[in-house]
Image 1 (tube, rainbow over the protein chains, first blue to last red):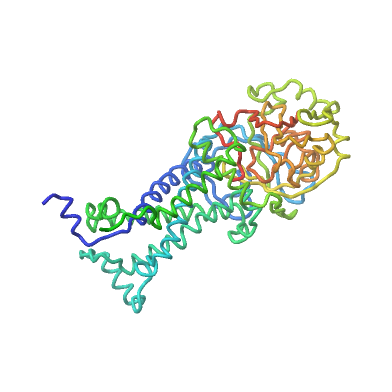
Image 2: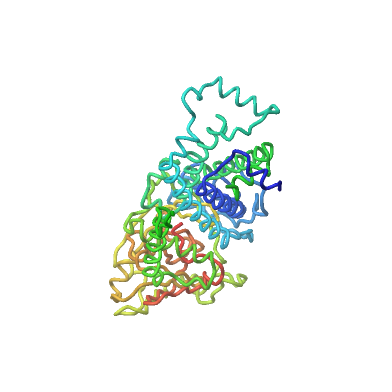
Length: 249
Length: 251
């Protein structure tokens, strides 16, 4: 008996459309992560509110490029007709900026994510996949069950039941119905043309720079999910799981 | 024997989507900027066409309160009045700045019935609009300021823009240039600003006249505008596309 045959006999099965969506979204997400990081490098400062820039206070600044804390500014000139202390100043520092390909890669990958994500949502609803495989069952959703499932994750145990655990269901549902929508909608909120047509986007995320900061944190949580997901895939039988989500019948 | 069906549901859906896509593409691609074979530029074009197709083209961007105005960084390619600036220096601009733009005039030419030159006084007579809007830079930062100027639509009307005109290019003294399509050119918030936060535009913010394209990111808003050219054909005046940047930036 060959290795692949023994793997096939295990009882994990994914539908073809789930596997295709998983494949496209994984690639798109990795491209979004890399390009998003490159975009953040050109302005590694995050703010809260409607607007924010090098001449206004930041929430925090990330030491991820030579642009971090750069001090290359000409003397600030105050706006004389304003009541506050607003100024204008010219930048003298030659910043790191690879947004030409960074932004376009980000948006191209976002197209793959959004189109595949929408098809996945439709298929998930109409095939009963969400209801059957992901929604916690009757009596399954309780603090006791949650605690039991959580503590089981830190003990050596068998996961291979071919069904998702409670914690796993909650995590997948949060990623699909909360984190991805938030990261996409905050992305839309940053687009001048989309926000013109749908100004509520700027309101629900507290402004352009708040949307950018929420976009960043949502992406960090998605990256965290990816890492934990990969760890769990390895812990529960890497070869078998990988086979099941790719070529497994 | 089981008959092999020509059409199953999955195939029907797939065929439907691809043929609808093909029909849409053949109609739209003629309107899209060239991609020079770059897959990234194809993505930019997809964003452009979908935003044009799905978004309201008359929707106004959010306008803010006086109290929302922030500080405003200047992050352009260089100072056109400074001989040390290799990319942006213009002797003509330096002279104009020294005389407070006394002899400055804006040129408009191309697909217009009345090409010509307009002094700041003549421009101001065409109309005025003030707006407190957000400038969103591709780098990631944003800034809010009040801009006062002439609606570009008023100037295009005065110059007798031809019905066949489709793009408007803006050339700055700093040798920077950008073009926008007629939808953005005629947008009510697209203005040629001569005042910022209630005062004459500070030199480095684009004096004496700068473009404001509020529906796109900051780098479309050309500063130190010298010349406007209306065209029927697509023009990418500073070769954004060949330089690896998106021409359309509503996102």
